Image (cartoon, rainbow, N blue to C red; front, side):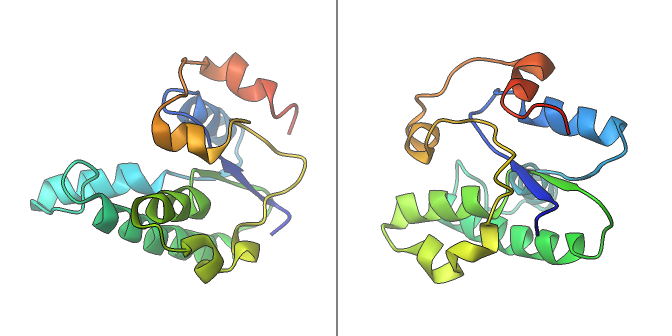
Length: 146
């Protein structure tokens, strides 16, 4: 999994902009589970939405992220995830108080040490203390050249 990178950070922090740029440069990218869930749930009138049932939403995001990782294992080269397992697991743990990250096995989401984005802790993400729209220039600042 040394060729997996997870782009994580605050809302409007430039994650999706960076993912789009990586895709343009022909890297394999995986869209954020949350965006896919919202689209599917709205289309079918479902309730696993963050503003309706946050716990169901987070559990579904974990399931999708695990599937994404399994599928990405068959891809060649670098694979970049727009958020992923650790984001969903940290959110579920925050909401329920149960040790979700431990239960999943922290080794499942081992990040490549050379890649970072959104250096703030997950506490800031969950409490809404992150602000600012970075755009591509700000998003690549913490990552450097890939």
